[in-house]
Length: 299
Image 1 (cartoon, rainbow, N blue to C red):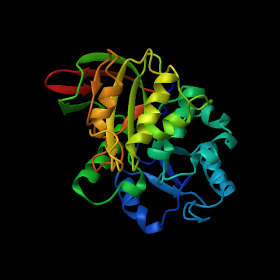
Image 2: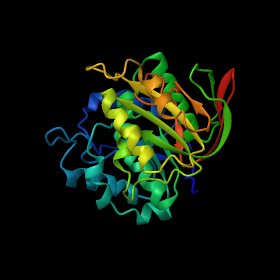
Image 3: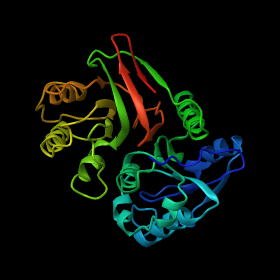
């Protein structure tokens, strides 16, 4: 496990767009917040470019990400937003310099592929958390941004939550691995999928149909990925629909059904993903998950 150096005031960070288009006004607040912490913000050359719905052509997005991976002065890379597109460039990137001088990769959703790729191939820790698009001036979003920056500056990463009715009690220890559930499952069988043996898995998703997610849970189980899992964290499954009324339960109940045959601890309703309060998790970091009758602690 390799942990990039934590940030300090005066460090340079970069914002790049590996996926969907974004406008300058959509990251203005984020830049202000970064600068308040004493960080120097640099923007990728093509961060606001557009090619159809992508933030520039594949080549433009590839060049931007490659440039900041190689730049020794950049201490953290904040991906501006998710959407779709990262998978189109991940295998063309050269991580040689990044491996020699690791830096923080920050984002979630479509950015899950970056987290899993650097974990699976290089055992490097990255940060699943809010992106500049999500950093807006509202109470919960401000809290998400503050917790994210605190974590990247090396402060305590402990999270304490109230118990959820579907939680399964127990204690799990292991590396924390996960991200967007749909993206994660799309990586099964590839060099970007991290082996889940003895890991604590965290998952979240957005705008999906229940039957589609049901199929993915079967895929994950049939692949053998859950056979030696240490624990499960269920984050925000936001705006999930069951248009044809296949199931008659909500998404958390469906997930609970899929995991009844396992004995590891489970924590539901975790504040991660496409939710207003999106707390940072360090992908690939060793954590302890404690699920009791009264509370959930991740530390």
